[in-house]
Image (tube, rainbow over all chains, first blue to last red; front, side, top):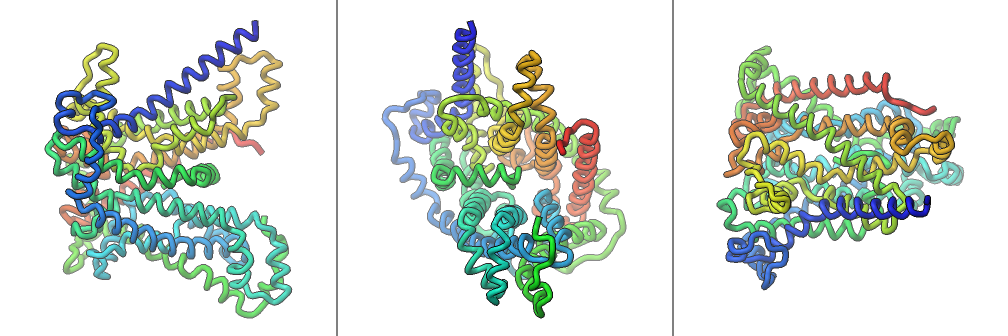
Length: 279
Length: 302
């Protein structure tokens, strides 16, 4: 009797799982099949799952028709500089918060935590004015600087991680006359590989995906990042006519992030479950 | 906690200097990019401000002006309707998928990856893809029409564009799912074993053990999701039929879209800052309210 119940339970378990995952995955199928159609297939068989023939040349067309290499290189510039700055500042700050004693440490930590809940719109108007007065509108710097100067989320992540490294390591080095900066760079940082990897992955994802900041700061098309490129395309296509090319563009936009996800899924998941937020 | 006695090094000369060296970049950032701007937003809301030529104080007239604007109330209403749909939906779907993944099931990593992966995509890509999914011949209506019902025109219908936005945004519930999954795995097994002995049904276990045990996590996600909802505006920019921002009519004219247009298309920075300040207050009030509620309903284990 129980055996029978377990079997039907099992069956329903997998049925529900397949159904749910099927729905979650269906947009990807739609995306790919639409991206591989040509214009006549869009009209004759808009709902066909497997267009025949498949039009892989759409990727070539999109790369030729839009300044993809410029979008990519702008985005990569932002990503690379943001990573370098953010890793440096977040590890330094996280180190001080986790492993150094000073007055106001708890206050500083709480002020940093509060930033994680601070929505961009409450601070972006003054940031825009500051960048305008510094003459940085018209460059990529407004996209780079705030993230290169550390992220509250990464500082929090770093602090949690560094608290887990035994204090005795630092104590021993201090007795040997090692300076704090040396302990940081020679002893603690070499042990922090996983946490730094998480920071690198999240910074890449945030900067690659960011849309509101480019929308506000970038006023010439020469500086457009990939998300702004995608946004311009949607404005140009007269409704459904270029659907296949827009979908191809979407694929090119998400491919690098999907690649990173596949390679580094573990860090994504652990980073989020250790803190509870993204953004 | 960190070692109880202060390390001997804190007595060493120059220690404060070293601490400052570590903290300097972030302190700079906190002032220039975070807390300074918040303060500046509040100050700007009391000014008439132009990008060229600067500004002067005008008291509260920005506030009286924005309150008289009909679009302010439209935006507020749209944003609240969005939040009322999005927050419960994201909670339900996030917890449901987490619950499924917490069962004893094969290929767990594979299922989890499928549910999580939409959450790593850029919101713009999701919305652009979604725009075409909601077209008459798109994925959504194709699926609906499998049942024989005629699919609606989602993006041209003022009543349907917000539900369409919510559906796309909860496709990214993977973040919430991961957090709930972590919480579910933290519920002690012996509680369920005891309940099993007492003959508590599965749904009884869910409502009397699972939900109370993970309630702090639920509360935390609620706050995050409400703040996300208050800031929503990109769907109103990308989804509407014919690319009319806020359309059709004013149905996707969200509050933050109002701020965006005021600040960065008409460069009325004073009024935009007043709008942002109202939003600061709103998010503080709502967070406070949720926290207060938690004292009554949320179960914190010592």
